Image (cartoon, rainbow, N blue to C red):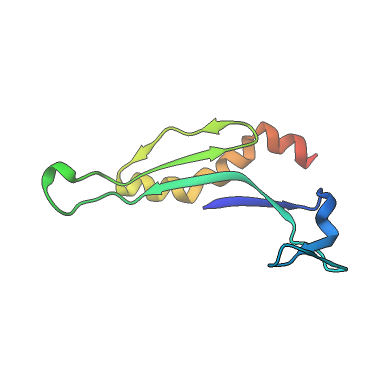
Amino acid sequence: MTTVREGTDSPQAYSATSAAGGTSPGRRAPARRHVVAALFVDFGNDRGPEETHRPPRARYECVPCDYRSEVVTGAAAVAAFNATAPEAHRAVCPARQETDQ
């Protein structure tokens, strides 16, 4: 899961670039997108030789406040983490508190 925030703070917000490299006056360009958070999930590997097995794991990162969670391992722990980590961090994120006021 990646959280993306859109904005139109670019000077090209009201001109679209064509495939040929030119602009189309009057057409609005797509809004700029900024990644603000990411949930990384590795589903693990339980096939093949025993030495190549690895358990599922997950980690959450918030770009504005530079938060990185600890890596969570194990199928049940990863499932619970994925369900709660983004919302739990949003509630306490200092960068989010500044922008939501």
